[in-house]
Image (cartoon, rainbow, N blue to C red; front, top):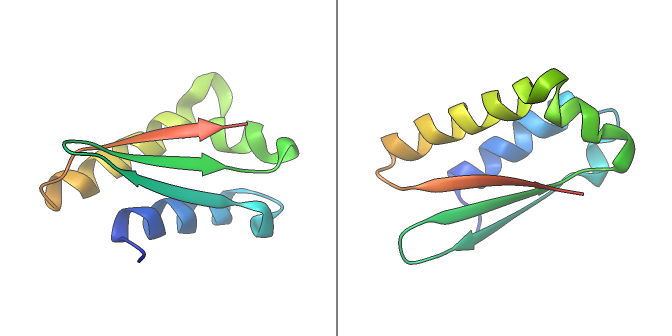
Length: 80
């Protein structure tokens, strides 16, 4: 089962990186919070995090806005 939040983060991340085939998005649904885990190729890690973490912060802001609209709470974790 694929959720809208997982698809959203996957779509944005694949658009940012050079190797979109290596993008993995996992969703861990908890009682109160959903954790979205994003894993990209090591060479693309900088593109997803961005200068001073701005791209990662923007991803989190978009995720927060989308999850608020769906009346859910979610957190983005970028894994190496």
